[in-house]
Image 1 (cartoon, rainbow, N blue to C red):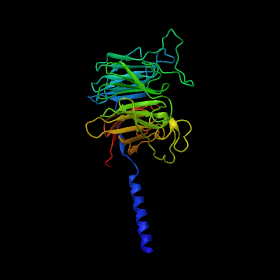
Image 2: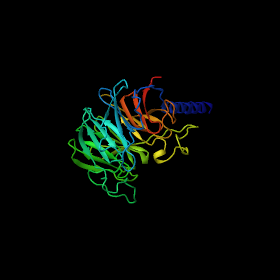
Image 3: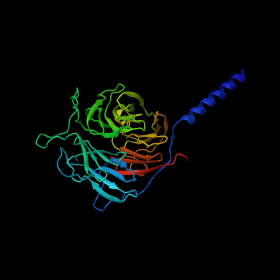
Image 4: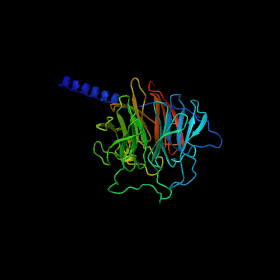
Length: 358
């Protein structure tokens, strides 16, 4: 009997030890200070987007330059910096599409894509900053211009038009996938020449349905990862829009973690403000092993995952200091251990260097 009890204790200890080591670990990291060298009269507003091109130039899409009428003041400015953070230029100064910056992406040919939530438009620039393609159309000033409102049931989506789009990505054939986020809750697909193909996803909570697709990325096989923020999950689709699987992140929130503003959510929080709700995602480039990074607003963490959804670690918390975050709105991950985070509430972009070996 004593021997059986001892064996049982050993087995339970082994299981507990295995569970302990299986828990995701906090990844040590640094925030590089004073990355950006801005001219004296230039400022970031709410930093809604960040992207890196093949020269390691940094593009920041900021809700700055707040002048001119939209349905509110125009708040969109696209700035380019070299690899050292030296300011180079403003892309698209006084562009007709600028209204309310949301995200910026760079494709494999270093073309620059800007997603403007306020004008319902997506603009493709060549590397020199000239407009190549236009998607969507904003409301005319001759009309009673105003933001699209949410009604129940939702208005039916219109092919080729958007209601508060959020992000863009591409598959291996160059097909274009735009997350048509806040109102339509779908993904729009165009071919590489800009011709409408189809859309997939409808508002809802079932698999394949979406609730504010807020960020989008593709892996080296062309699978499309959609940050289904309102449903607190990342959904994976094939290039035809067929649902493959869902990824959720569940890491307990430690004691004393406060929201950046407002009431601190109870427990893990719910929906958009829930722990693990994906506000921003990025996938490291191939070839080789790719990693998926996802950021939430509360408790203000970045999560490192394998593409099959295994949680490998996490970092950060809410706050205003370096290495803390105020609503990460877009991530760029040019390599496994280099991540850039654009923050809405702190009006900044942080360059993060991860040290997983520590």
